[in-house]
Amino acid sequence: MSSESGGDVVFVGNATVTPEGLLGANWVGRWAGGRVRVVDGKSVWVIERRVVGGRRVITLGVASEREALAELALFERDPSAYRTKKQVSESAAVLAGRAAADAVILTPELHKEFIEHARKEGLSKEYIEHILGAYLSHWGVALKGRDLREVTLLELRKLLKGWKTAEHHRIVALKSFTSWLREEGKLHRSNDPTLDLQVPQAQPEKSVRVKGYSMAAVEAVYAEVPSQLLRDTLCLRAKAAMHDTEIARVARGEALLKEVDDPCGIKGTVTFLHKRGDDHVVSLDAQAFAAALRLQARKRPLTRAPALVMLKRAANRLREKCATPEEREEIQVIEPGAIRHSFSNWASDHGVLVRPTKQGLPVEEVAAVMGHRSTKTTRTFYKRVLVPPMIQLPLKLVHPEDPPIASRTADLNDSNEKSVA
Image (cartoon, rainbow, N blue to C red; front, side, top):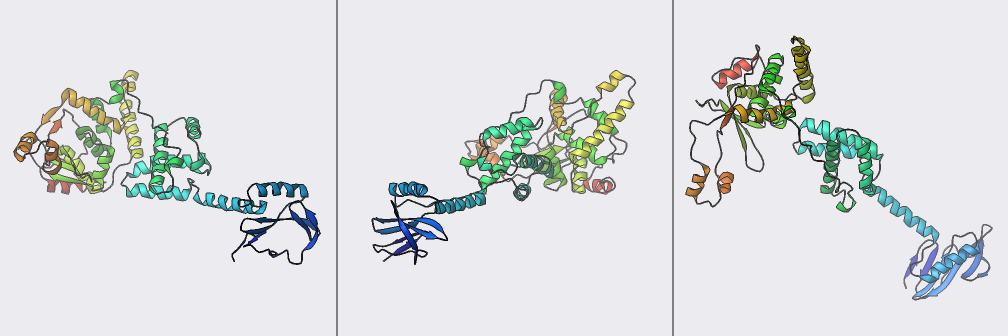
């Protein structure tokens, strides 16, 4: 004999039993579904029905016979699936608790966990702090503790319209966060409201003015900047077209500096090691190579905020030297990131390609001798460009406090100790 109890429901095999609580019950009458008893002065309606496999006795938590008849109708529709109001309430509470436990909310704790993940991925400190961290905090405030699974794409777009700036960065920060949640198994694709949220494309720039600066403008600012660290950063941007992340890697010691001293004018190379295997090598002249050595000796890069402050001050000093208002209006505050665009313009108009003295054979000929059908195989697995060509520009970056450019690396290291700070 098997038994099953659901609190106010008792079902026992084919036998008729009295559930706990009904023993010694004060039965006062019958109704359409069974019998009525009195408990603490109140009427209690009980369903008594014989069903397939036995008999069910169900105590109803209702206040009137009318409500009892409504429950009886539900029971007779599907006796095996019937649940009392109490059971339905308890089940709903359990489901609500499970839903709350599984909720995906942008909490400070989850925000911190994501930022730690970004650091381990090797993203720059500035990008993590000013893009991911800052804009994700904005999203956390705007979403007000809501479960991301319940947020709609339309709601996200309305929030974006409420912000007047940085739409691109805000979307990138949120999509990076939800992508990480999916990787961690905390959010399913079917519940991710950001999947169809498109990152807006950058608008094409309208003029050469926005694309960069003249060499004379950069030379003038370089001569006014008092910080050797900023001058070294400007030098690597202007002479080697380095990205901000590349300069940061040089400063953190994540790039390999090698002296070459080639007669063609290439003083050394900087190699950025990539996990995928195709290392990026850049050739530098003596001034740029010395700047890279000083940055590496300092062990940390110059961040964006202080760089902009110093560049604004340099522009103000240049304006003070101008004789006319027209000249003052022509002085621009140099944006470090735009110098890379300037390099491409300068190289197209004035650049001279300088090749190493020992040039070697073209990769196509090496591939033919080795029997490779594609030069891609040769480049990927065998050929490593030790000293690539360098674009030489008629750019004169001069400052009275720049250390003299030594002929040997050892001399550079000695002279740089005083200028690192």
